[in-house]
Length: 186
Ligand code: SF4
Image (cartoon, rainbow, N blue to C red; front, side, top):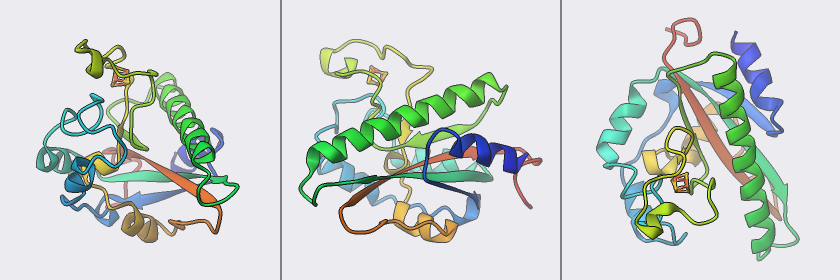
């Protein structure tokens, strides 16, 4: 079953994926202050981002209720380190893969998992939050690893995945978490 889920993940086009035990996922509440610095411009402008997505300690506690997961990544080539269009295009592709994976899992009958991907929900061109309207796809929208306090570089290291894939590349991560005994080791 673990192999099947790993294959299903990689079949969405991700470059690498590895199972990771829950206690190997590194959490750090200081990531909330990174979000609050609003370098990405989404703080307070997306329901799936802080502060709207929830209080950091509550989200970290929620994540800790899951016992294992699959950490996956997409790597995209860039023209150079200032290739912001390339980064944006890669980010959109990664999000599309994450949503495809999410749909596949639900169609395959998996329930009760927690799925996190790159920052920014990515489902709508402009989040309804900025228009004072309710979320358009509440059941579908995914939050980010950072919003839940995941230290992605330390967690990637624990999973045996590279955090940076080389010069002139950009890497995005996602994580699907499960509670089931059949999937998670003791
Ligand atoms: S689905 Fe649309 S409205 Fe809902 S959080 Fe995502 S971008 Fe915002």
